[in-house]
Amino acid sequence: MSKISIMTDSNSGITQEEAKALGIKVLPMPFLINGQTYFENISLTQEEFYKRLEQDIDISTSQPSPEAVLDAWEELLQESDGIVHIPMSSGLSGSCQTAKMLAEEFDGRVQVVDNQRVSVTQKQSVMDALYLAEQGKNVSEIREYLEEVKFESSIYIMLDTLKYLKKGGRITPAAAALGSALRLKPVLQIQGEKLDAFSIARTKKQGVSKMLSAMENDIKERFGGMENIQNIHLLVAHTNNEEAAKDLAEEVRKRFGVEDVVTDPLSLSISCHIGSGSLAIASSVAVR
Image (tube, rainbow, N blue to C red):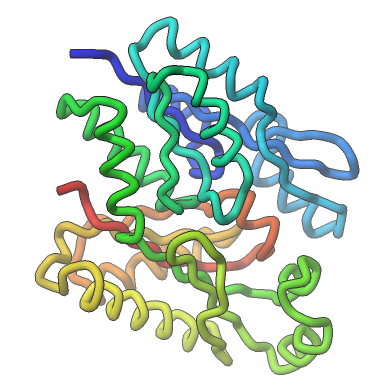
């Protein structure tokens, strides 16, 4: 059986330590902070990131350099027959398109997955790829499967602040001022490639209720119904809000009658655009 390497980027939320334990490669995403480049989970920790964010220091995301991508692939191909590379959704970053272009020179040995996933659902795609590789699937078969099921996932995120949506130009200053005055909590969704508005809540409790209901509806309408719940990965994520995330995970367990609910931080690439204090519920259908 051929040896397959799995590679992703730190948008998946997989740390370098977790990558070593899983036997995969995680390319760190670069961040520009006051003009200086930092790399996620290498020269920039979650704690340092949120400290800088609170100080209103200018932070922007970037994509890995083509050289960094090619160097990683060349290194992996010294010990494996092929690579499945799972970057962040092409709708949210140019890194996927860059990788697809670079892969054309590798005669099919590098397969770049464009399955519209980000953060915790991207991480689940990595876990699925590892499972498929263990089942003897080749790099093309793994890519094809992951792209085929790309819409079998869902994320809902409740924000604690409108500040960063305003800063990124996603809402007008007037709407942000009104929302802040009324203490509104926007709920966003990622279904496929875009981060879109989903709903508005007046309280955190109402926002959590809206997310739980939306997820239940997705399971019933898109993921095979509640009778299929044991074949659905349910995840809770947050931006610098771990205790609230643990409470939400308990609510998810009770609501859906499941034991295993993974809780992870959202990747910094998302945190950059939504700020601290958010909560998210995500799901993806298990490999069939």
